[in-house]
Length: 104
Image 1 (spheres, one colour):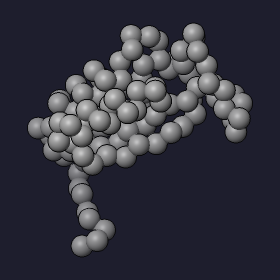
Image 2: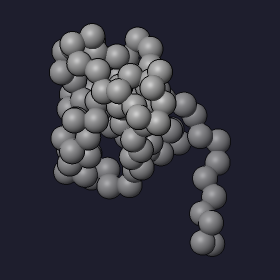
Image 3: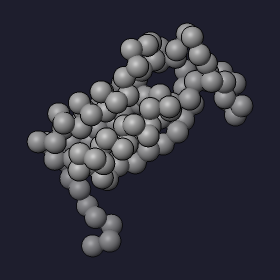
Image 4: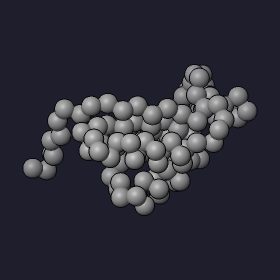
């Protein structure tokens, strides 16, 4: 199994999420955060009221999938989060050693 974490622009969330779902990848988590660093877009900044030194809003998507789905998911995220500007984001893929359902 693989865990995919993607950090990208807030305004791309709907497009990324809808296309993941449309392609059968229904189960993922989305978070909104404040960031700083090389992901910032020099043409547009989103100041944080809670953390004034953090200067842009970022979406974080997390999804755990089977190894054979990894490339398709990465491709969907990359295609639909892309704007061609500095600050489009990053995708990380890591191995998952075990999955345990809390309910069971």
